[in-house]
Every structure is written in structure tokens, then in C-alpha cells.
Image 1: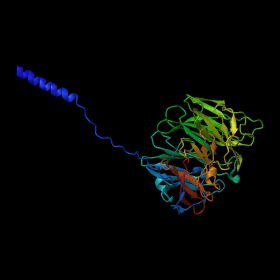
Image 2 (image 1 turned 90 degrees about the vertical axis):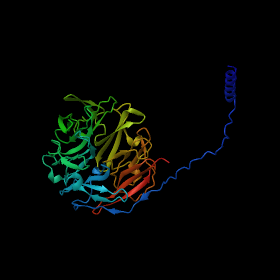
Image 3 (image 1 turned 45 degrees about the vertical axis):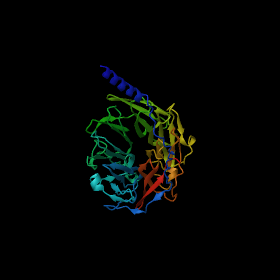
Length: 442
């Protein structure tokens, strides 16, 4: 017993000795912090050599219609889709598509394989929609077309008109010509169109405007295609349409902007059209003849205001004749007030706003506008960079000012701060190139 007690004391003493011992930490190694080397930013603009456009079928007309310059990315392949058309000569040319070599800028026509064949173009009117219109999850193509404006063809004070075009997207990334009853089968002077979810079912609906008794035609998406809801006739000389939720109530409306009011007593407004069930109602959003006696609206741009995201500014692109163009902007606090944009921003007073593209071109989080149809102007005067409140300024990007053809954004790289543009020089023998520009804020 005595031996056991002695052994136990030895164990306890040993444990106590270990617990009281001090462990000396290893010596600390002091290292100098590494300062990362900032990346070298290349601000210079890159130009490839001119590439002749390769056509599978000879041109009938010389020039593309700038209102149908559409870049699409379909199944990982990038294409240009456009029409060759003018509104003053009787020969018709066609909708045409091209595969794009994004390194050289070369275009190779693939109209038969991509669009499913050659289809005549009268004089198509943008927007050229690339959206799912039949609810199958695949994007389709749609564009309105008013045809030729040749005086000798006028009958009963009307031009003969033309048909709209609808190309249905397929799972393999190609398209097939299809029809939407009325608009792709009956000649009218179609002038504008809008795509959006008007009835809140999550599917894209379609509004087509024409200068005839219908004024506007609404088609709703039933999940397999577009079904005609009916005509929206509000006596407003409608010249352009937009589907948008302009007041933040999560319910989209149709915005109708008038073309030139030729009545002895002015009676046109900007109007908001609400759809409820099987009926519609309209509300005035502007003073009578909002753009003046001689100006009519041919495009509406709707942009959420970054400073008030629940509200939207509407931009009305109006004209009184060739080269006589203005832009008006609605106020977010009172849509009845329209400001002439030239009074609220210092941008180039452009005369070529017939078509546009909206994108964040300088990677600052705000949508900018490129008026890419301004043939004859250098690039910086065509671009409106957003100041963060839907007012805009022109950039001062490095660019050869002798280049005054069509600039179409092709690829965006937010890391390098660069945008690749496809540059298209029109004519009997059109050519293209890639212009790679640093566009990010310095």
C-alpha cells in the first residue's frame, strides 16, 4: 500500500511539472509585404485590315438599310442580320445574314443556312426585335416594314405598303420564316413595333403600328404563338409605340406617341394605354401636339432612371423632314412635361437618330446610347454616355475621325475596358474591319 501511494505521488508530480512548463514559441520571421504590380492598360485603338464582304447572291441594290443592323449571338456563333433596301426604287433586295469573323471582321453570307432562304425587304423599320415571341424559350426575329415610298405608286392617297417579317428561332440556332396573322400576310404602311409583357403572364406580346384604320394592333403570346387581341384605335396619329412600365406599378402599358398632327385643330398627345381583360383605356401624358406643329415621333426609348429606379424617362425621337430631327425627354417627376434634350445636355445635335443601340459602353454601370446609323459622322458624336441620371455627354475615345461608316458593337470586355466594333463601309463593294477601342473611364 505504501508503495502504491509513493507511485501515485510521482505520477501527480510529473503531471504538475509538465503543466507548469513554459513552451518557447519558434522565432517569428518578419517578411516585407508584396505590393502587386498594377496591370498595364492598353489605351490604344486597334484596327484590322479591310475585308471584302463575301456574298452568296449578287446584290440587287447597293446599300444596306441601316435600321436593320442586328448583331445576334446564336448558339455561341455571332452573326449580322440586315436587309438591303431603300424606299425609292422599285427593285427589291433581300434580308441577308452573315457569319462574322471576330478576329478579322470578315463577313461571309449565310442567308440560306441561317434564315432559311431569301425573302424580299421593302423598307424595314427598326426596332429589329430579337426576342422569344412564341413562348418556346428560343429567340425569334421580327421587324415591321412599310415598303416603298414612290409617288407614282400612290393609290387613294396611300402607298402600297408591305408585309412585316417574322423569323422563328430553332433549337439549332437557325431560323425559319413564319407568319403572324395580319402583319406578315397583309400589305400596310407599318411604321413601328414594340415587344413586351403587356398582360403580366411572363411572355412577350407584340404591338405593331401602321398608318391605316387600325392605328395599332395588339397580339398576345399564348405560349405557342401570337394571337390577335384586337386593334387599339385611339385617334392619336400614332407614329411610334413602346411597351413599358413607366410608373413603377409593375404593370406594363402601351405608350403611343403621335406622328405629325395635320388636323386644323390639334388633337394628338402622348398617351398611355392600359389593357384590362378584353378591353383597353387611354390616358393623356402630354400637352396637345407635344412636339410642335411640324414634328412627329418615329421612335420611343424608355430608360429607367438610375437615380430613381422605380421611374422611367421616355425619349421621343421626332422629325419634321430629312435632317430636321429633335429628341425630347419626359421628366420623372411629371411625365406631362417634355424637355428638348438640347436644353439639358451638351451632346452633338445629331441628324441621324433613325436607329440606336443601348448598352453600357464604358462599363460604369449605366446604360449608354449609340446612334449607329449616323452615316457620315465620326464615332464620338454618335455616342451618348450616361452621366448617371439619363443625361448624357459625348466621349473622347481615340478613333480615326475619317471613319464615318457604320459602327456596331460586337464584343465587350469589362476587364480590359475595351469594346470591339464591327465597322461596315457600305457601297457596291462593301468592306468591313474590327476596330478595338478602350472605352472604360480612365
